[in-house]
Amino acid sequence: MIEIKNVGKSFQGKEVLMGISATFEKGKTNMIIGASGTGKSVLLKTIVGLFSPDKGSVLYDGRDFHASTIREQKIIRGEIGMLFQGSALFDSLTVAENVRFPLNIHSDMSESEKDDKVNFYLKRVGLENAAHKMPSEISGGMQKRVGIARAIVMNSQYLFCDEPNSGLDPQTAWMIDQLIHEITQEYNLTTVIVSHDMNSVMEIGEYIMFMYKGLKIWEGTKDEILDAEPKELKDFLFSNKLVRTFKGI
Amino acid sequence: MRRLGEYILFLKKMFSNREPLTTYVRLFFQECINIGINSLFLVGFVSLFVGAVIALQMAYNIVSPLLPKYIIGLATREMMILEMAPTLSAIVFAGKVGSQIAGGIGTMRITEQIDALEVMGINSASYLVLPKIIAGMAMLPLLAILSAALGIWGGYLATIFGNLSPTEDYIYGIQNTFVSFEVPFAIIKAFVFGFIVTSISAFKGYNVKGGALEVGKASTDAVTASCIAILAADFILADTLLS
Ligand SMILES: Nc1ncnc2c1ncn2[C@@H]1O[C@H](COP(=O)(O)OP(=O)(O)OP(=O)(O)O)[C@@H](O)[C@H]1O
Ligand SMILES: [Mg+2]
Picture 1 (cartoon, rainbow over the protein chains, first blue to last red):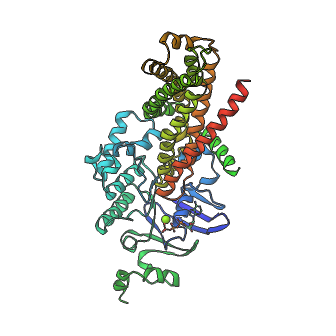
Picture 2: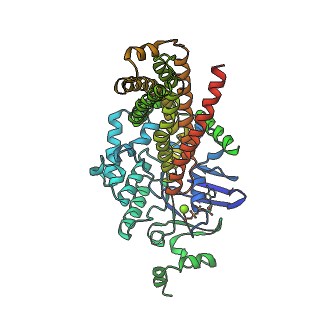
């Protein structure tokens, strides 16, 4: 479980996050949604410690990340996996080396144990045949899957995804969503996904938090979202023809 | 001035909370091979020709019969070791390696590869940059030594093919009144330049914001800033170490 409490962040006097609190539960796909530029990525990066918040705290199962020593932070980081918007694979390493990378940093396994682990997770995401390819030689959807394998190879407890299906065709996007959802349940992860894709929200969102200009305006489940009250959320939701059709308006 | 402050903070960040040393050993050797091979050919080529041209121009300038012919060898040696070998190698090095470092690290920045390293708990500044800086400081002196040797050899070839003087004169010239401190001085210079080029280029790349356009700009900026810093350091070192 991850709790964020009153998290605030400004850049050069511009307030991007204005005190956001939320709880992301274990074994669930938690989603942060909102229009472009509302601070979703900044919030995610603050949670994983790429930015330090100006105020507030982030608790990983009770451990306050930003108040921890560097050693303690490193332990938490060993439990964090993150899938980036553009996959962020290391382009000088092969697919298998990318997945192996966190193991080299954090674990003291023997080389053959690492091999086994890498093969296991590559198989899990369906890429056992691409192990020796370079990231530039595989498709965007495959890169995302490598990113997922790299994110969970450490037996991560927490999985973060920034727009996991951006730039993918609907079918591949659906497949990536399903993969993240399955993995979350399989390994009982606390998963937080940033998205503005209503399809994935309706498919896999178990807890949904809507952000608008640095504030949390609404939270709830996908069954509640179509009846939600705030005007900003309605505007966001019903700009989408599919959702309008679905709701019959 | 603010950039300078940021640059110093960047260097400091590299040394705080870095990975265990063993992590760096393998990276260091990779970088040495990469950096060394990358600029080897161009440094060699430039040095050979610069040495030859120095010899030719010296010969052209000696019109007085009173000046001994061995001056050609002497001057080629002096100019190559003191100035051309370390400084010219460093400039070539900035063009080839510096732009590559800035471009590579800049690309890693905009594609979030640096964020990915940080999320894994790695100090990206030291992981990416430290091996490059140390490799630069190890390789540039070697390149400078090679450059000096090739330059002097280039002068020798010019002497033969241009019929400038008897080769014995040239050989005598390059051995005449040899001040042994000049060699360590050249090596110190190359060592400092190696640090300057790699650290400035890495700094430029590391702080890229934006997209591919900014990465390209960081590469050229890295070369410009490195060259200016090389020449400034060249002046300061000559002033302090030679007086
Ligand atoms: N490193 C930074 N320095 C300064 N400002 C930043 C930085 N990162 C983000 N911002 C600003 O914070 C605001 C929110 O950006 P953010 O990337 O979080 O939006 P987002 O909700 O993720 O949008 P999108 O859906 O387009 O990804 C933007 O106005 C952006 O300019
Ligand atoms: Mg974003």
